[in-house]
Amino acid sequence: MKLVKVKKSFFDLCNDKELMQTKNGRPCVLLVSLKYKDKRRDFVVPLRSNISPNVPKGTYKNLPPNKNTKKNHHHGVHYTKLFPVSKKYIDTYLINQDAYMLMIQGILDKSTKEIVTACQNYLIEYEKGNKDPYTPDIDKIIEILDS
Image (cartoon, rainbow, N blue to C red; front, side, top):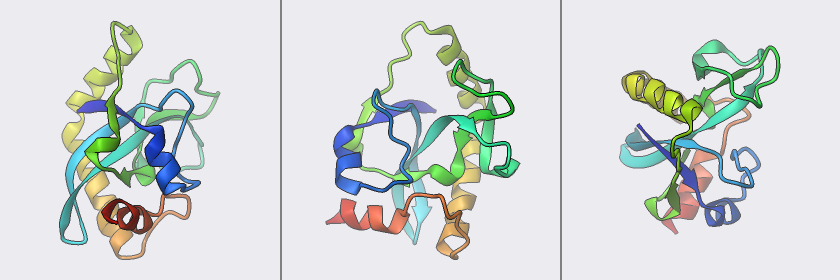
């Protein structure tokens, strides 16, 4: 698994309120080649510090809390916040020797199959119209990227 940042220019272009944008560039998990509407596309899934305790457990991969995680909230890879992206909008997320981020990278590497499967399953449900109301508009983003 590769941790990346999505460039500000992508967020400016797509302008979707459900995209998880931060000032310094939120770390995202890059998923190459997920199938959506019979076409392979690149997607990213953001890491979130404060996933509400009300969010269904199967919609995210739980990770150890970070310094910004509030009490009773979760830190994790939030599958329902995934969105398509073009490689030109991707930058490497620098971990350097940050012990916490190295630990997260290790967990992600061991969980690759689980994360990819969960995201692909979410996309299958999204295609059927079974989508979370607080998810990015995947079809609109694809339309923008393809134009």
